[in-house]
Length: 304
Length: 132
View 1 (spheres, each protein chain N blue to C red):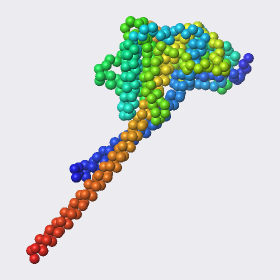
View 2: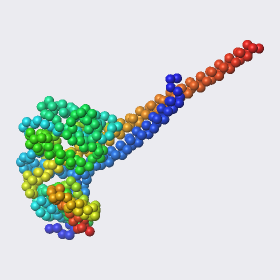
View 3: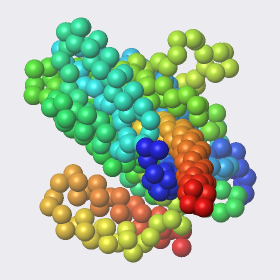
View 4: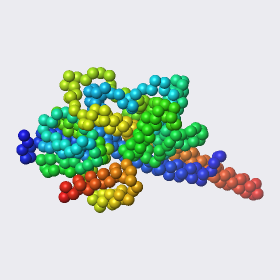
């Protein structure tokens, strides 16, 4: 009996309280996912209308806007990595970071230098620990992002994209790495190029009935586009933040569920061992008593 | 063309994170960068940039007032969509807060930031006052 019965009891107790904690976290994550999904749904009309408006302008005017212009010889690329603020979400943050590493590798092979922008404390810590430079990091909102944050991130990225080549802090491409929420069970780390914008979403031509009406633009198509495109970029970033939030919560729920299951297993195992130890103790005591009685009896018999 | 209570426009007032108001209406009044604009049934398709101002939607159940922070309006096939980063219905506007904001903004040094905050606060106050 390597470990005493008392110690096993203590282990069972601590595992039980851990199980309570992980169970609570699982439930919290589950209830927040529903909210996160509702937020994503609530934001959908804006994104849809915006896409419609952008494609309307793009169809009826020659889109020649700084935000859609491809640099001839791209030298620097900005990568925005959307991670979580808190851990205990399984492989959520590390799989985003891995995807980002792959993207960075690819961009480096194409001869581009990388500027890193990060959302979420986990990513920031990862880069700080490895002493890699971060241009800017935003933290503190990963499980419920607001539009204001997305707008701030967006305007920072747009600003550095619009700088002339050779200027301090200029980037020629902007990529976003985030986790796409496919379902409660699957979340996929995804890398997309945000800027320069590819305005037409999907390649198939619209149906006859879906043809967009001939719009008038006020004050002019260029100025409308000027107002539209930054908002479009921000809404895309908002969309990725919302998806990432839902994915984070789903990953956390899954991780916490398996932690709870494992704790249950552990409790079962320890209970068995503890019972065995208890039984062994009793058996030993009995055999000691019996042995003692026998020895006494033998001694008495010898004395008579 | 439109009598009292008649509808004919499908209006959606959409902010970045939610649909603020949607329904039928007979007329929409909004302020674009070129000036006030009214939209009735049968309006030509258009896309216009809005300024920070109060907008009015004449719905059958009464006039809806709201304040928007810029954004734009798109009209096509009697569907009107007003898209903006932030929108507040008159009922949601806290006039005291808006006034405090206006005062705070007036104390700022002159600049774009000050102008913008004053415009936004004024738009909110106007929308709230019109509704009451």
